[in-house]
Amino acid sequence: MNLDLDKKRWVILAASCLINLCLGSIYAWSVFASSMAEYFSNSLGQNITSGDLAIVYTIANAVGPITMISGGAVNDKLGPKKVIALGGVMFGGGMVLSGFASSVTFLIVSYGLVAGLGLGMAYGATISTSVKYFPDKRGLIGGVTTAVYGMSSVILPPVVTIIVNRFDATLAFKVIGAVFLVIILVSTCFLEQCPQGYVPAGYQPPAAQKGAADMEWKAMVQTPIFYVMLLLLTSGAFSGMMVISQASAMAQQMIGMTAIAASGAVSILAFFNALGRIAAGYLSDKIGRINTLMAACVLCIAGMLCLYVSASGQQGLFYIGICLVGVSFGSFMGVYPGFTADQFGARNNSVNYGIMFIGFALAGYFGPQIMRSVYASTGVYQNAFLIACGLNLLGIFLAGVYRVLRKRKC
Image 1 (cartoon, rainbow, N blue to C red):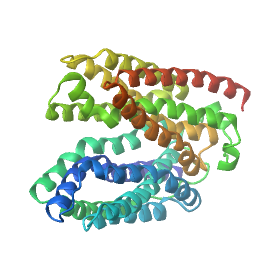
Image 2: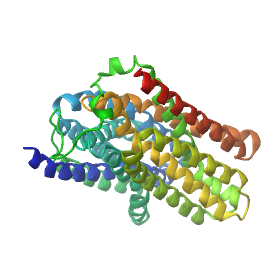
Image 3: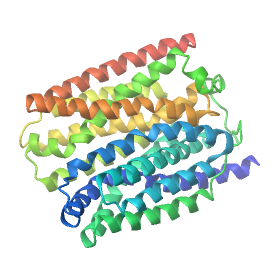
Image 4: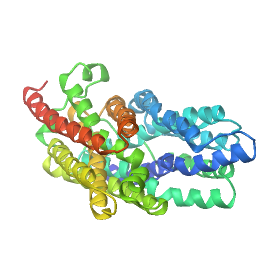
């Protein structure tokens, strides 16, 4: 039986990655938004800008943890098929519905709520299921599954742009949503629940994993180490979320890049984000999760300092900065699924990781907000980079606290 599962788990991983590639299309929102704004203004006579549609994207990201947690509870008990199928119907269906939008409110419901809740449900289940099947490669698999999600920001925007330019955003929503719906539903046919206690042939779990109790979420949130890990995730993800939100504007206003060149910088940032997820996941299996996260904080400080001293025309220094920030951010996203399973057990990891993901949601809110506030008050981004450096120093301190609590088994 184990030998069959040892082969089947790779098929399950491939199906999960294909699903995440579809879900990651949320990063192509800016392409949809500009075209939808034109549609509302030119076809419906509404004075709408792409900035007015930012609330749709914000809501779609904000509601994800809700279904990551609720759907995770079902996934841990019944398996991923039903959870991801429902999430896929909501995500793909929400995109199709968005093609019939006649107002911003309609988009908030169809894309922000329906598609956003579906995304959280399916995304949490694909990652948790994959990690459960690979106790021998938790870091790498967490990195791969999250990296594919992130790579959508590199692969899908050009495809969306072609459809939008040739037709319009309404048709793009309908076509892409329908295709994603089919791909996700077909992919779920290859998924199944990981048997409790599954261990690949020839694998001996290290002492750290053997000692990890399968905690339910109520027990997890009563441990001090949970809050240290959640704050560490917030501190580590803050810089990435801050820079990603303003990468194009930074490139144009700080360095003097054209809009086209700035879009290339955004793609480079996305690429190194995805690369960091895989590389850090693999590295964390070798040197440990907490050592990898501490290294990511150090890299991010170096990247922020490069951005801090960047000025007009210094493209090389700017690119080094965003590459380091991308790798650091990707490291946290790739390592944390396995990190959570190591600490609190794999059995309830769907729910536990969903709750831990609140740390990412906090970073996703405060990072961009602080970046905008700093720029609005000073006219430059530099002070925001220093704040990010401070939070990464806090991350290094929290990693030290984690070590102490880990030794005490708190």
